[in-house]
Length: 114
Length: 113
Image 1: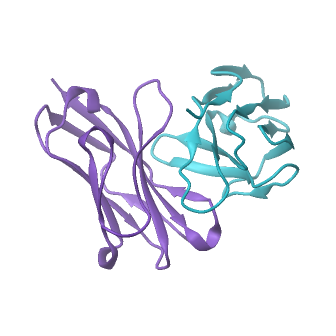
Image 2: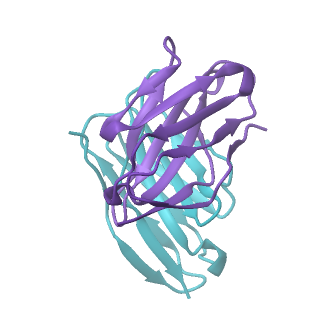
């Protein structure tokens, strides 16, 4: 079965620290990859997505992610976090053969200390 | 901007009750989804629909059913609510075709007593 693994469930950082959240998936076929963010009390929002082309994708609010096909990974990065980045982050994978279904990781709760 | 509206933000029901969760989207999206979100488990797909009157089971359909009588509305039904269905329920929608990101509602936090 398809699965998506997010390595850390809780991450605590100080402002201006660099962030990297890991995401690995288990499916070997053609995939689309997403990172969603859920700020406290808000709905899930799309942070960035990868469909094809340049494996380094840039999203909103200074986030970026790199697709490494050989490692089945799609890690999220930000060079310098802010207090307002406190949120829960979800990696999701869409397997193209299965249509529009998404498989989500368990989520990573990021707390940024001011 | 896409708007996905879930009828209730918070809901408290008793075991054995029949519970309806409603979701409406205003962008003429073909695809609609119901997930439940639990700490440490992420989002798990319950049911989805690619068209009116069409439904497909997701990963955890047991104890749930759905209804899609109109394109903009997708209802999740708990036929006989149980305490293990206490959770946050999220509705999402997308346009047809691949590579379409999902747009989410605010969620309904359902407690079954």
